[in-house]
Image 1 (cartoon, one colour):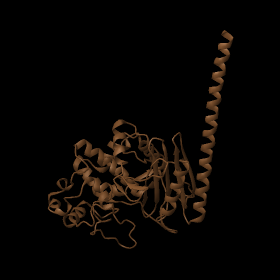
Image 2: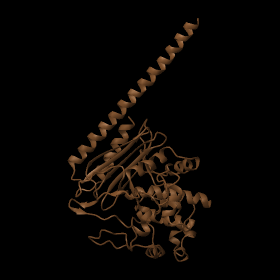
Image 3: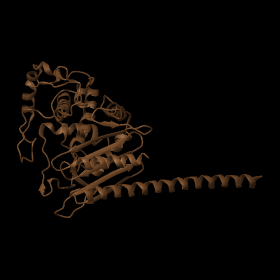
Length: 365
């Protein structure tokens, strides 16, 4: 009897071992399949386009992987790696929405509240602004234009935002008129203003708010103000042979001014997919709730956009563009799956968006 029990025990252990071995082999095959897919699609995109380089980072929920082709710095023949610095462009808006929601929570202010009483007195006199809500700044329905009309864009200027400060912003808002408020109209101005209001409400700088609510608690960095510290910069290009400069976005930095590394961004997406605390989970749930439907499959959330296909998890995404970089980032809630695509060339979002969506959709098969 004892021998029979012992034999049955070992049979069960052996069966469990076989089960785990099978799962491990399947996972290894799945990872290998995704890696081959990423390499093939990235190499193909690079071959078809005139690009300096492409950097891809992705996570299957169990580990992060990196693939690159071309160069981060063509002059030095230096490739991208996970510690290479780049501009993330408008993906910054998702950080700004997160920060603003945290500040509003701490100040016990609803995001459906009007912003007007939190603006300077001179701006409050413009009653046109009284129906702008914090929410409408985050989901591009405020009626504010893409850029302020008193911002001078000069041909050949590699720093279009550098001289646009808070004085000019508030001067513009004193006489601003809204166009189709309540309708989706993408606005860098609105996102920038969201960050400015977070500063005014908290009495802290945008950089300090990023440290307080994102960089440190979400473990993107280990010490204050160390984001991308000591990282090698990638060189952006505005055209094939024309180098760009990293933007100084001044007061509109919350709309697109962040510079990060691939490693840092993957930590950020991981914290969006699998929040590190209950408080963070509540914020992420708010950010990812759809607020405007653009089509049967695409919605606008707070900071993020989302795409939902039949029988598939929702993908939350944002892209970005500066004079030197075209970027795309996406994640799936709960699974740890995410993707980041960086191209160090202006106006290449058709490539980065398509590549990023192909990769995240492949992981969801």
